[in-house]
Length: 259
Ligand code: PEP
Image 1: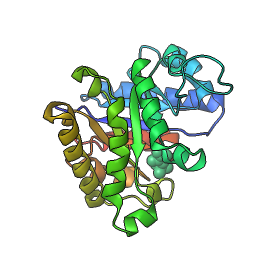
Image 2: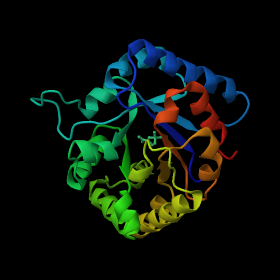
Image 3: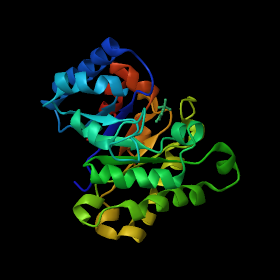
Image 4: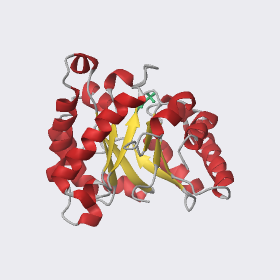
């Protein structure tokens, strides 16, 4: 298998600690049931920061992995209110979401900042999941491929040299107009962009690495549309927001992966 499927839940700023523990344990129980039946994909949850340590204590050693929703571009030190990559690693995270459109739009994160965070994530031993995608006006203006190409190219200089490390980059294509709106990209629209991103990755990094980097689709993925999206040849998994907050919906999306 060239690329192992990856399903990531982005819980955003939802829930309190008890709810987060219940949700994480519910997902883990569902995965444990499935593990006996078929080869399972890789599953990551990205809870709010305060839930990471207690979830790591309860889930540590299980197949369910943890990710941060964001991290600082700086190392440890005088950065009030920030969370470093090493801190995320320290509470069991293997992944970190970077450049989510909500961070880009609401908190002014630029391509340059996302690139800096990508470099720091690799240095700190985290696998970055770099989010990119076009706004509605950009799609309407026919600029989708140009926009995602620029966002992708911005992070390439941040990748470490060894090929074994570079291929740990994950890219999530999330059209901004589809996030939290209930309007998903059609499978054809998703494949068009994913196929283009795959070609760019191969051009920029060579066949070996370009063909191994996983491309996730995100934007109103639900149990009802997951199978059609996840069976596209260059869609290697999903980044799920709203539907990751309900155990049965999240597990139904995992079940929709082609076996
Ligand atoms: C997201 O926030 O990354 C996302 C894909 O959200 P939703 O699934 O709710 O559209």
